[in-house]
Image (cartoon, rainbow, N blue to C red):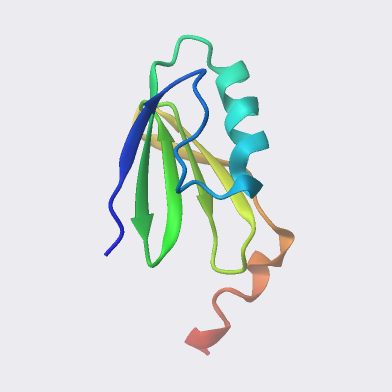
Length: 92
């Protein structure tokens, strides 16, 4: 089991955060200067980083980085790999 963590905006990401996410963390902190802290959780062994209740940065099943903006209960994927067309093939 992997434990989550919290850290303040502007600090270095927690040591468990993959270095491949550092740039995305900095970009989101710049987009949301009013944010206070990050929360790191794990889902299926992959990191999920929530910036307050504003945005979620995650690693998908193919190793790509996704950024999902959380706005008034709605989720909007801001960037994601274009390979999503094949995600539902297992249903056929």
